[in-house]
Image (tube, rainbow, N blue to C red; front, top):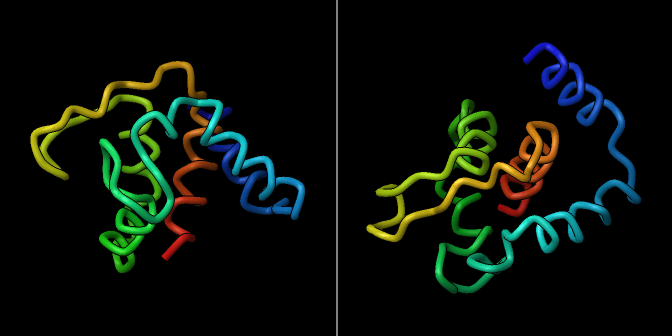
Length: 103
């Protein structure tokens, strides 16, 4: 857990255009694209819709990162979001920030 916090802090402190470009590939290679698109419905809600829902929620980044790794159901209807254990905590934090920045 401590390592994940350190990695998350580093990711926040060291954003670069290369890192941002890597996120675009990260969401495609970590199965996000199987169900989500950036600005249109697919099996799951669009990333921009997710960002808009949580725009004023200070704890959204952490909860969304957790949901990416653990999955869930009910927030967006009855469709299950499967757990994504292949996504590391640091990757989930990066993806969460990226999604929330799409607002």
